[in-house]
Each structure stands twice: as structure tokens, then as C-alpha cells.
Amino acid sequence: QIAVPGIVEQKCIGDLLKVLDDKIQLNTKINKNLAEQIKTICTAWLSDYAPFGGILPNDWSEMSLSSIADFVNGYSYKGTELTESNIAMATIKNFDRKGGFKLDGYKEIIPSNKLKDTQHAELFDTLVAHTDLTQNAEVIGNAEPVMSKSGYDDIVFSMDLVKVVPKSKHISKFLIAAILQDKKFKAHCLGYVNGTTVLHLSKKALPEYQLYLPDDLSVLKPLDELVTALYQRISANIEEIIKLETLRDTLLPKLMSGELDVSNIDL
Figure 1 (cartoon, one colour):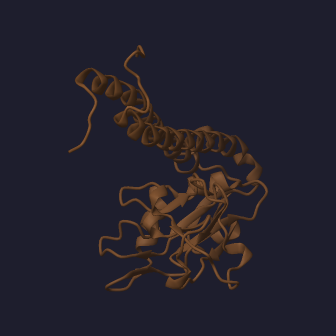
Figure 2 (figure 1 turned 60 degrees about the vertical axis):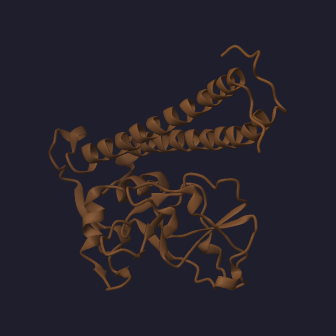
């Protein structure tokens, strides 16, 4: 036997929660649109050369990813370290099969003193999946920036991932993320996959990725500023979604128990 509110109260509760759910869905839709904008803009700049009349400029040359970025291997952890804490570890569980970074994929961990300073992930750091548990290679080679710490004090990334860090002052971590989320990078990585039961990405995959960039990287400043603003907007929307979901989940039991009365609220 359970106590439930009357029909009128149920409708009020449903209307109230719908306002929160609608905003969550709207933010999610906006973020998908912003992500598509980033891909479209980067393709226009780095593949179609739209700002330069659609022609590859003479002062652009083919460069390897290793010339503009460094690569950091993740932390090799033991199962005993996975325990409740305010430190989260990013793994391939954070990589959605359809693309995107899943916040519910974090594992809580208390790492050992073997953890290196470089194996922490800050907001907007880009992580690339180097392992895939499926044979479809849906995740391996995917690049995802850390868009939220989801309330944790610190983020560590596992050995299944590699952090890509820009080493030029003219290329931000936002532009690195945009470059690696291009479909050409994914296609490149698929040529470096090996393994049977578990797929692995060769360590050569990232350093050997080739792309055309200007000899003077400061030329990319307008592109960098634009993708930076878009990624920051996505992150802000994600943080709002987290707050709205927390509010909804906190309100629901209080509303159903009658602790909070919304029958007189006009929505």
C-alpha cells in the first residue's frame, strides 16, 4: 500500500516537472546544434578553405599532429582503488557509442601515489579512446573534451584513454578538440586498430595524423575564438542540465509525499 496524491495534485506535479524536463530537452537540443556548428565551421576552415577562397593557401603545409600537440597516457589502476570518493576517473565508459561524453560513465577512485601529475584531466581537456570492447570500433579513436567535472573535485583518466595537449600558444585545447572531432581523424584511427577480443589503437595513430595548417598558426585565431565560445556555451548548458536534473530528482519525492504542495501554483 502506498499513498499517492489526488488527480488534481498529480496533474500539478506533472506540469511542474514538465517545465524542468522541457528545459533539459531544449538544452540538449541546443548542444547538438552547437556541436554540429563546430564541425561545420572546422570543415569550412580546414578542409574547404572557405575563408581563403576555397583554395589551399600557399603558406599552409602538411603537418603531423605531434608537431602541435603532446600525448599523455592514462593511469593504470587496480580494482581495489575504485571506491567512493570525490575523485572521478574517466574511462571508455564515458564515451557514448553514438558520440558524446557521458557524465554517468565516471568511476570514483582513490588513486595510489603512482598517479602522475599529467594524468589529471582538467575541464576541456581532450581525451581519445585507445581501447574498445566491441568489434564495431564505435568508440576507439573517438575524441571527446571533458565538458563537466560533474561535481567532482578532481578527474583522473584511465589507461584506456590518451590526453592530447596543445603545445603551441596559438592553438587552444578547444581547437584541438575541434580538430580531433573531425570525421577524418576517426577514419585515420580506424587504420591503426588491432586486436581480436579487445580492440587497441596503435600508439602511432595520434602522432602520425596529418593535416594542413598555416605555417603561421596565429592565422587560426578567428577559428580558435569561435570554437572556444561554442564549446564554452555547450559546457554552460550541460551544467544547467545537471542542476535541473538534481532539482527535479529532489523535488519528486517531496511532491509525491505531500511535503511540498503545488496545487495552488499557476503554471
